[in-house]
Length: 111
Length: 119
Image 1 (cartoon, each protein chain N blue to C red):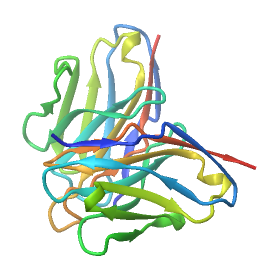
Image 2: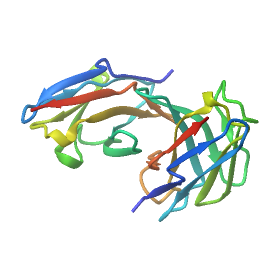
Image 3: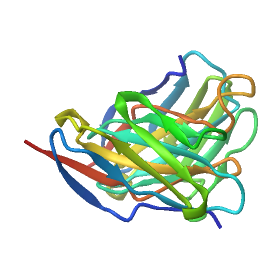
């Protein structure tokens, strides 16, 4: 069965500090992996995606993620967080037809 | 490119009425669209997969007679919440998967969501 785990329900980071959001997956084949961001009352915006090739993926808004097959992980990183990054972040895995989402991590940015 | 719209963005209705939500892919064709439901501070729950020209596939536990899905064209899917009750109040989000040759395989583009409140 395919599943996505985001172990951190919420994380607080100081503005300007670095960020890492964790994502672990379970899937029997090569996964297609995504990170989405959702602001309150809004839909989902794609930050980045991994299908194959280079395991370090660059996305929008200065985000990047690294696919590590040995650890079944796809962690999201940003070197310097801005107050506007405060939002809910979802990791997702694409299996046959469907996207499976993690439970999300809420990012809070402190001054 | 790859924009998905939803209408309305917010709707308030009385208990017992039906509400229709539209999902449109504006600049691409999508044989397959998806409908999700999201409760406050929770993740997205897939309700059903909508396929153009055929019946939708509902996830386990989702009442197909309650949530009617119609995918009449390659750019439009509709979700009708029939005889809505307060427990149907939620945030409904649709997504569309571009047909082969338009975008990456299995990638979905999401609409902005519809907030349904049933009084």
